[in-house]
Amino acid sequence: MSENPSFEESLAELEDIVARLETGDLTLEESLALFERGQRLAALCGAALDQAELRLEELSAGSFPAPSEE
Image (tube, rainbow, N blue to C red; front, side, top):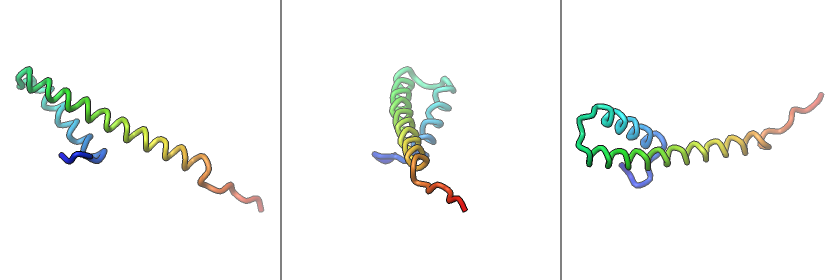
């Protein structure tokens, strides 16, 4: 995984981590390490979604010209 993974890469890794944790076949240390990684990935995904929401709000707030009355 790259240092700055994309939203899609982060989400895919997070889904993999959840699946691995759900199996229950990991040691406590492995589970904790995966949980910590998952927390970091969830934060990255949350930040990316927040940025996307801000961009959408900015675009909606004034980028589109008002329809002309003819």
